[in-house]
Length: 201
Image (cartoon, rainbow, N blue to C red):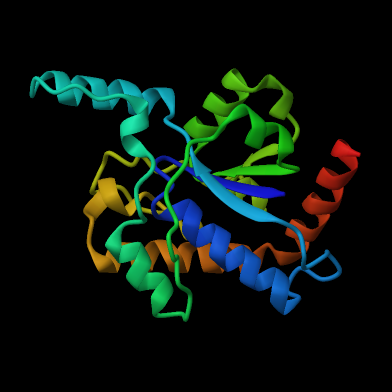
């Protein structure tokens, strides 16, 4: 299984999941098996959780990590995928669990901080966990800070559209960044998947 991971599993990781599965079926990652299982999940990176705690305390709210999950994708995500002929059906967001981390042959995070959190929480995932840019061979690009609206977004850095600017145009930009990254790194994806298969055999 290839597992894509973002924060709330309601936009970026779902787009990765649907696009990657479609590319497998189309043979873009040939010669890899098109029946490879593809899923997505969410994880609350430490820096993001600290930010949220500070945010909600100032407003006298309470929030747990579970608050982020068990919801449908954002409407913009649903519309973005529907425009390409894909329906999310009854999909509900889910957190990364130990079972998923152990089952995945490759874990791909949308942010560096998410990768760090995974390796702290699930040390056995080391060697199988990559950022999206590492996954497509663009690991030298700077990491986008999802809290700075004015930050320049690198070509293959699908920044979180919810915390940047939750508009349809941002989700479309996120989709295009993911699409471009996966296509540009197609051969590297095949190599990494083959390596990942061997790690877990």
